[in-house]
Length: 322
Image 1 (cartoon, rainbow, N blue to C red):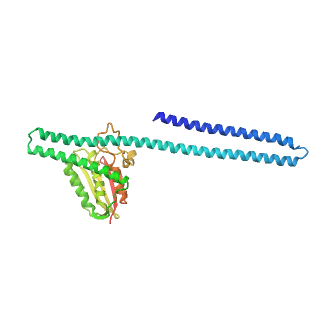
Image 2: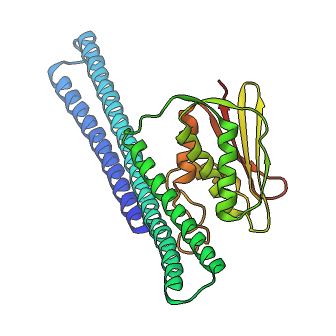
Image 3: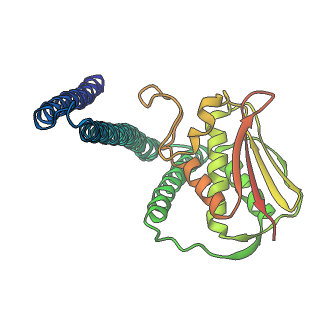
C-alpha cells in the first residue's frame, strides 16, 4: 500500500511538474514572439514619421500578447484542474478497491470459520453418540447442540442467500398486514430456547405493520443474534417495544463492550466488522446488520445505535404503523 501510494504521488508530481514546465516554455515562447513582432514592426514603420500607425500596431501586438497569456493561463488551469480531479477519482477508486478487497478477504475468513465451527461441533456430538453408550439425558443434550448448530448454519445460509437476492434485485418483497408485536415475541422465545439465554421483555403494546413479514423477522433475528454475541452469558438481553407518534419503536439492548462513536456509522456497511479478523473473538460475517439496515430502509423505517447507560449498546428500529 505504501509503495503504491508513493508511486502514485511520484507520478502526480511528475505530471504537475511537466505541466508547469509546459507553462514556462509557452510563456518564454510568447515573449519571444512578441519581441520578434516588435522588431518587425520597427523595421516596417518609423515611429517618428508615422507615430499614429506605429502606436496602433504596437497596441494590437500588446493585445494579442495579452490574449495569448490569458489563453495559456486558461488552458493551463483547465488541464491542472482536470489532472487534480482525475487524480482524486483514481485515488478514491484505488482506496475503495483496497478496502473492498480487505473486506471480502475478511468476509471469506469469517464465513469459513462460521461454516467450519458448527460442522465440527455437530460432527463431534454425533461421533460421541456413536462411540459411547450415553444416557438419554446426555443424548438429548448432544442432539440439542446439533440442532442449535444446524440452526446457525441455516441462519448463515439464509443471510447469504438473501444478500445475494437483494444485490441482484431478484427478491420481490411481500406486502401483508401483520402483528409485529407477536413476531418480536416469537423471535425472542426462539432465541431464548435455542441459546438458553435470559431475555427481559416489554413487548405488550400492539404494533400492526404492513410489509414483508419474513424480511422483518430476519431483521429482528439479526439484532437478537448480535446482542447474544456481545452480551456475557450471565447477563440478560432487553427487548422493548413501544408506540410513539404513529411509529412502532423496537429497542434491543445488550450489555456488551459497547460501540465507539467512530464505528457506529460503519457497522451497517456490508462486510464491516469491528476489530481485526485474525484476533476477533466474536462470530459473524458482517452481513447481519447490513441486511437489517437495508430491510428497515426498504420498509421506510430508520435504524440507529446508541450507548447503553449501563454499558453496552442500544439498537433502535422505527417503523411506520398501518
